Structure formats: C-alpha cells, structure tokens
Length: 98
Length: 422
Figure 1 (cartoon, each protein chain N blue to C red):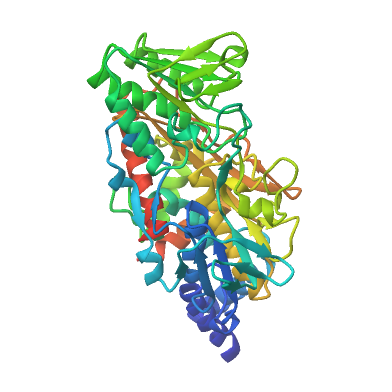
Figure 2: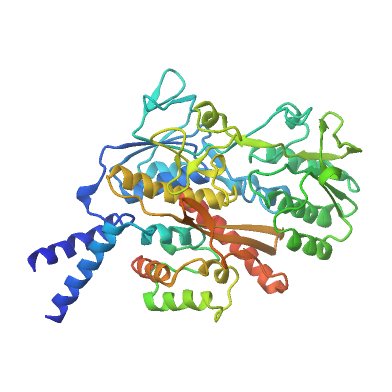
C-alpha cells in the first residue's frame, strides 16, 4: 500500500509540473551543464563527469558550491544563478543519465 | 488506481524518450519540418537537440561549408599552440543523428510561403525556421577596408583561410617586428576574443620572436576581462604590449597595401596588421527583413522567435540577445532553448521560460586560463543576468587555479564541439 501511494503521489507531481510549464524543464536546465560537462554530463576530457552521479551527492555538491563551502573555479559563480529547486531538478535529471 | 498507475508508466517512459518536454510519444510532432540556416554553434546545437527531444521532426540544416572551423580556439592556432585541423569539424555526426544536411548557401527566405530558396531553383519548405547565420562584416564602413583589403590585412574573425593567412604572416614576420591589431567597437562577436588573440600572439613572440612588439588600436574605453588580462600581460609579457584606447585607438582609414592604420592623429605601420571590422547580422537574415536598423535581429527573448516574422527564430551572434554576449557558448545555449521552444510549439504545448548561461574562457598563455560567466533568466519578457551570480575569475587566484581554468577551457571545447558534431 505505501508503495502504491508513493506511485500515485509521484504521478500527480509529474502531471502538475507538466501542466504548469512555468519554469524551464529539467533537461533544458541541464542542457546548460552539457556545454562544459558533455552531452548528458559525460565528458571524456578534463571536466568532471556529472551524468549518472548519485542524485543526493550531486545536489549537495552543487549546494556547497552555491554557499561557497566548496571551492571550485567557475561553479561557485554559476550555481549562485540557480534556485535550490532548480538545482534539485538538475541533480535529479542528471542522476538518470546512466 | 489503474488510471494513475498507467499514467505513471506513460510519464516515466516519456521522461526517457522526450525528457525536454516531459510528454509521451503520442505528442510527437511527427512530420513537422524544421529548417535551420547556419551550422555553427547555434544551428548545429539546435539540430541535435530537436532530434533528441522529438526524433520524428524532420530537421534540415543548410550550411554552405562542408567542414566547420571554430572561432573559439582559433587564437591558439595563431599562437602556434594548435593546428587548424584541431579546430576543424565534420558534419557527419549530425547526419548520423538523422539531420538532413544540405551544403548550399541559403539564397533567400520567403516568410509568407515559408520556404528557403537554395541554388538551382531548389527550395526547402519549413513549418518553423531557425536562423543562425552569424555575422557579416560591414565592408567599407571604415575607409579602405573591404574584402580585398582583408586578404592583405586579415581580420581572421571568421575562422578558416583567414586564420591560416594571419598565422603565416606572423610566421614570416622578422623578429623585432610589430604586430598591429585593431578590435571593433561594440557590439561584436566574442568580446574577449581580441585580448585573447593579443595574448596568444604575445606567447608566440615570447617563445619565437622575443624582440617583437604588439600595438593595439581599440576605439573603446575598455574591454572584457581587462583587469585580469592586463595584470597577466604585465607578468607574462612585460613591455611587449602597447594598448591605445578611445580616440588614440580609433582607426578611421585602413591602407592595407602599406599595412598602415590611420587614426585622427597618427599613421601606424605594422609588419603584420590585423584589422577586425565592425559587424552586423549575416545578409540572409537582413535581406529577409529579420534585422532592424541596428543591423541585428530583434527577438522575443523568451523563445528567440523573431519579432519581425512569424514562425522564424533567430539565435546566435545575429540575434539581439543582450545582456548575453555574442559568443559560441551563448549560441549553444540559445540552440537548446530554441530547440525546446520549437518542439513544444510544434507539439502544441506551452513554451517554458528559459534559463541560460554563458562562460567565456580565454587563454592568456597555454597553461593560464581566465573566465567570465553569467546566468540569465527571463524577467518581464527580457533576459537579465541573475544578481549575485557569474563574474570573473578571482584576481588573486594562484597559478594552480589559472592552470585548472586552462585545462577546463580545453574540456569545454571538447564538450561543446561534441554537442555540435559528435
């Protein structure tokens, strides 16, 4: 029963976010990451791969850049442009890019 | 219960198939035709993402060149750090994604009939048109500088033969010679580009022709990342660069044959002269009535649709996307935003507000990178840089940070060109 309830809840969330279309969708938001981190966050070059990362881990890293608890090169400057909700959506999306 | 369960399955499936818009296969705009003019940072990226978000949409890319030479990293070719082949890319990857690539020059656009004229009476019909043709030079606006003059005093502001020409001139220049470079007034393609070029030429001189000098004639009062560049120049290339601004840097006449630039007060002869002329949107966009009196194409910054023609979108350097700079990164991000907007629009769905970013990396030396970045959101129908975000590499950063940024610039180049061509 709890499992079914969760499914229902998730479905409702998805449906409502689909109808709103107010903010940018997660994949368009994450499209910005791809410009440096590669398609689906996977780059074979010098920039860290973020596609397929654990959602919680990625979200915490992004929030730590935003609050300057973690020091990077440009990520401190970039993350400050995003709301915590947008960061959550990006992390959630990139975590699915296995 | 059954209903919600079925919904859940459909939507989860959709998240994998068409994540951009978050909808099911049934919503595909199958058979809709999108034509894209220009296979650069904007157009090639838009092509990939439309195919990714709705593979059933027919995407045609019109681009005369059979290979694309990137302006980003072309300064590294001038500095002898990279070869022209390193920055030359093929369109085969896009063809592999199902994009129809036509290597021809788009001759004109009929926005009433919704078609693009190609050579030999051919036409490409569209439901939505994305115009991403980049810039043209305003030949003759500065007296004496036309296309013929550019073969003597290259602009090298469209990469390819011009890059190679300028590189060859620098190589042929004797040690102790002077390289004169003149950037244009605003707005122009790649605001930090001239200072990066000065840096790369300085690097080449330092390592191969140490007695040589660089003279800059800039009509502007300042330039992008000025503090970071000038501090680094002092450290890396002391005494080599003479940077003249405003009236002292304003070129009024070019004498390409004598490699001489005239200001109001002076005639400056160089051994190699790099004159970067003023610019506007490429002719195909202006001739189709997509540009205003400024020479650039106004757009609704929510979705980059033209404010002057229906079913037409303009992205990249040709568009008025300010406060976004005219950069490859900007065009790439706009390519994704326009792809999402066009797919949503063709599928009859509401277009989401955009969120964009830009980062311009510059090399001051091969192992010394700096950057400027910004994040943009829509407010009252216009893009604005998000307060408190973005900005420059820290002034006080150490060499480790500069090396990392140089290495990340390489990573960025690989990623962005993969997005266009892989």
